[in-house]
Length: 353
Ligand code: ATP
Image (cartoon, rainbow, N blue to C red; front, side, top):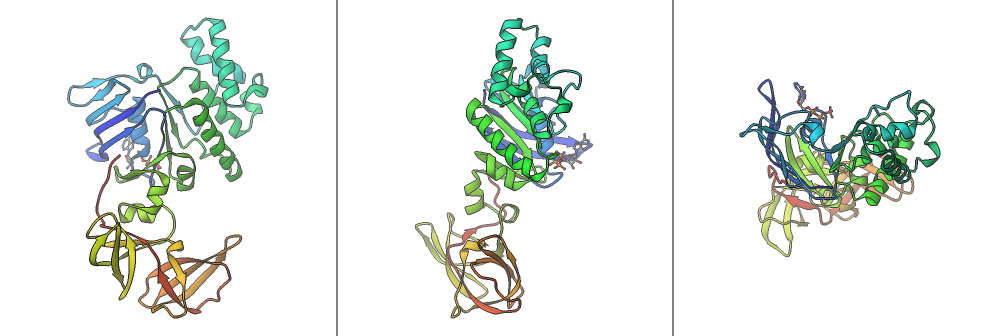
């Protein structure tokens, strides 16, 4: 497997930028998710890595091989990149058995039968498909077909595996099972994996790091925990997890990553890594109910989540907040709130991995 390096990668379609300068490094053996709303450029970046598109500007490296450079017109075609690709439409041969589907890329490469059989057996074992080896794809579930596609890309010993929304066609329960299957596959193989999705739960559940994209740019590239706890900007704070992003004023100076902030006239201590934050991200766990607190809000809706309630609140000036409560609260009930340790940041910052 290999590391993937993107340097100032840009892609324009008819003059319109689909990728507006991507700088990122994906380590050997890392599982990275590309996450973002529709049209943000996830698939375009994956297609550039695979070699289905050429960058308009910038350079791409796979391991120690440069595979694309716009300036010098260098372009290594897909078949010479040795990258495995799994699409949402499994693209299996319907007339071949599972085993033959997996063996097919090796037959094309004229690998001797004995060696080929060994590789196929390994891939069947890694994906848990041993019992289905002689079935036809039509006699498999969607999840099993997706595992055949994964096994088929694995037999070629690819330098990286690229996955384009591979679970989009599956129902919710199967998606959860397949998320575990992908995570296990990654642990067992140590493959470098790049996984495109617009589903944040999927990205956060599986990936070591997530690149959150917006309008052809990476807005933050970090671990799921860091994206949730320490978002770099309003886009990431809004897109990942629940809560509210509100403008707030820093008062005083930062000490030990803590800073006094003021929001709607209320003071509280926020976590921060910079000296002049402009916003805070208030997650549900940063709000505590306190009858005596001066920050007043009204209950708008309460939803049962199993074991706890999600409470939507509106402050007197119309700011919406979300809190968690162990009890059901009546709509329109007035309550007091303490803000405890939210994350403060300066909006507009862009970070790259
Ligand atoms: P989705 O989640 O909807 O698949 P995405 O994040 O994968 O979206 P891309 O498919 O990479 O987004 O598209 C990024 C932008 O580039 C979009 O505005 C899209 O319309 C445009 N685009 C992509 N491919 C082409 C193409 N071949 N010709 C023209 N425009 C394209």
